[in-house]
Length: 247
Image (cartoon, rainbow, N blue to C red; front, side, top):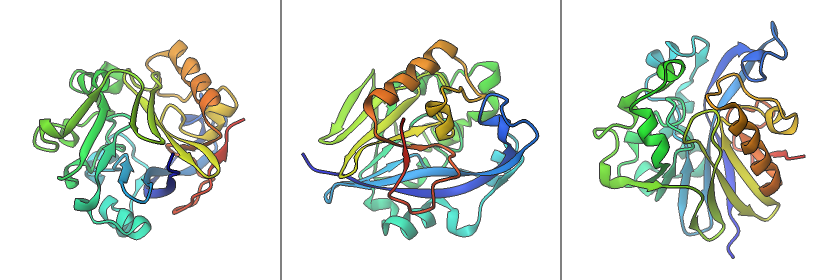
């Protein structure tokens, strides 16, 4: 089986209270967290996990502390870290459809997109607490042609050494992405784990729509993965290939 190389790609950052990542732990402590995408290749395929922000001012309505430098624009960041142009990306996997994880989907016109069908449906009918984080302009028919989508109904092998697993909790149809690498299995978790403390400390993030399922998702990640790139982990460096150990 081919081994994958996975790199962290920073598409912005958010200044917020630490407790927003850790179920009220650390309240009053201001931190800056990255917005992570990931690029991965097995030497043949070019895969992008999540696509960052669509519109900085629009996203600021949901997250007032968001910051994005020109080099963190998703296309510029993918080019800087991976050396890829948008039309070279074969596959985009959205962990979920919150607007900081699928915002630049429209820029990848030649990619095949993988999403859980449950997540795609939920994004067009969000629950009240979810409304600020779903922006249909990121994933509607004008952003992604319907025939670009590959809808999944559960765990799936995408390519040898590349698998998605369902990790609901943060959203109803959330998924995480597993890569078989030289170091072991790397989980690009999306926001079921905002930070590594969520999975390693069994500590739910604050935006949760399904509580029992969140803890079941943590367990799935612990059972399957050696390392994790959480959606907003500040200890990971831009361009890193080394991630946080799953305990």
